[in-house]
Length: 477
Image (tube, rainbow, N blue to C red; front, side):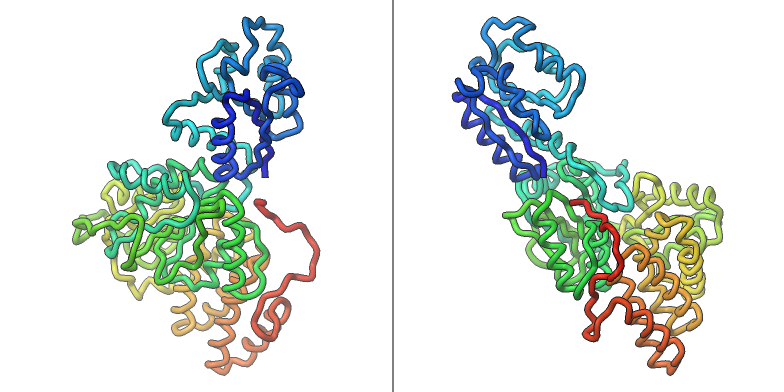
């Protein structure tokens, strides 16, 4: 948590208190209020250095707070600090017009007004930027060039999640109604109001996998059960200024966060019920347009991948296309309104426009085999393999019934990768799934192997316990 020093004149006490409440409630910081007077100095130019032991200094400028008929020498030490860009950084808020050095307006300068909402949001963004950003987020969101309108809905989300904290729901019963688009645009435009934005693909994923994904991104050790882990996740989000987007929630949301915390949760769902925003169905295209051979191959391969977010490299491997061929076809599909780019690097895409294709059984083996190959090479490309985890459930469900050898190999390789990332709950889920299938098949060797692997970190009740090995846990907080 950051420590801020706010220096102000007695007449601006109400403004200073408003600033402190806003920043402590929305920027994860503690604000020390220092009122000018004989003990600290009668002007900000004399009292500002009382905040040198803090993470940032805020100076509230007013006629009462600045030196009367000041010369440069009156401001000398403050200006030297600002000009040399020393720590802690100094920001100024102009409470009323008063003479002050122009250099103070070059950076981190804010103007108070009778309607200060936008100014407060801007100040909050600056304070948020002082926090370290080291969450293990797999990608940054891409711009949505086709997004227009929805300004009223975006402002509703700002009021609910930026100006306040808690949980908001975007609901819409039909695919293609714009739920994910709206959540994506909000996170893109207003993500700077949060320490980090975590985008979680939910859909039909097991709650254990969702719990493990969120915990891993927050740097939380995956211990206990999915329920206890989600409770820990909820407490962590409540205690920190982060935004968690739970996209395409089926049924009850894995967790929410209350209004009296610091974090915010945005849920998109097709479930009926009360929501902050309820979107009506849009007229969706009934079928995909005519495609050239490469685009059609990619489009068919996409039917096997997760529609809410898939790696282009995986789809290309299934379609048997080169990287440049797949990227060109994906960009064409984006222009046709069939795909959206999810990450700014152009490596993760999702279905758009409410058009999809029924998965082709003939391609399911390629999908499972491609995942098996990727997880074999996880040491060489861990960031790429990280994008494949959400694909495991469907691939394993098919392989267990149709190609047992692939099921065993895929599980073992994914298990090794997830264990190396300390994602123990998810690795246990996969291994237990293979164990149940092996018992049903009577494959005693696989049963023995699975039980041995699980014995290292799962107790008799099935709970995950803390690993015995040493090491420093990576954590955003």
